[in-house]
Amino acid sequence: MNITQDSMKIVQIMFRLCIDRASRALSKTLKTGAKISLSRVYIVDLSETTAMMNDDLREMTGVMVDFKGNVSCKLLFMLPMEGSLILTDLFLRQPAGTTKEYNEFTESVIQELGNILASHISNALVSDFNATLVPQPPHVHNDYAGVMFSNLVLEQGMMDDKLLLMETKFEICKTELECYLFLVPGLDSFAKLLDNSGVKS
Image 1 (cartoon, rainbow, N blue to C red):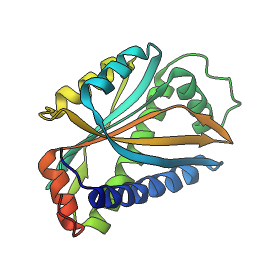
Image 2: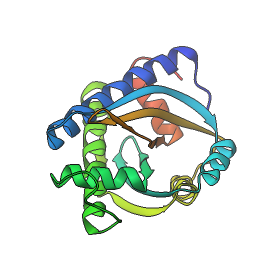
Image 3: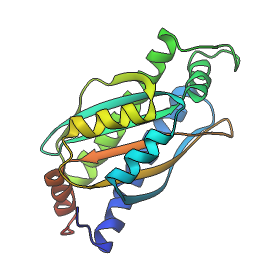
Image 4: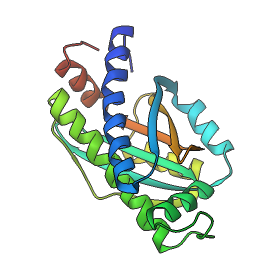
């Protein structure tokens, strides 16, 4: 994956728009102070990121979404179980600490979060960057970070040794929740997005 400095600036603008829209939608859904903010977008080594994910031995809840269209990509959002339980209580309008363990409500909440992220990311790319992008139904996973990341890489059929990583902050009621957010476009799709924005990769 060979991306110029000018291309990376466009990529950051592109995904900041996506995340901002998703953040506003999430805050409106929860009716509370919720914010997802994009810290940076950068290219990482696939083997190093895989090793980092394998070193994170916490139980995670995650959601994976596949996008179809003239631009294809996959999204993986995951956060430690503690954060998932906090989200469950917020979505259900119940006191924090009510949900003690992963259950069907937690699964539904993470699935809905996947819907919010996927729909607003795709809407931003469609409206602002002339993409055809349709999110498929989200799949919720409850596993370790390394396992979910490996599934993402395998399903996307990574042929390159580099990966586009979005570093985000997730804050709810002034509490920052740790999370991982990966958006992995196919190489052809990535070049198409950049071409649509007027920048050659």
